[in-house]
Length: 87
Image (cartoon, rainbow, N blue to C red):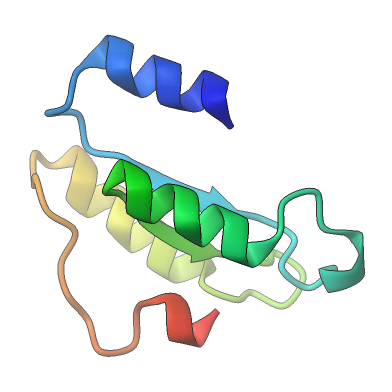
């Protein structure tokens, strides 16, 4: 995870960033615990979302957020259905 943070620092603070955890359906095979990823995203001041291609969990939300971020939006939009509690 630290190599990603180093890259974020290299690119500068004004680059939009989203931390995405994949394979959320394989809870017993996690490489990074949810709490640790959520803590990193909080410390780095970026949003965190977990996905699963198998169950389609948050896949569309990540696509939406990616489009919003790539269209020069500096903030991720607030949505009542998006967030740590839903993952």
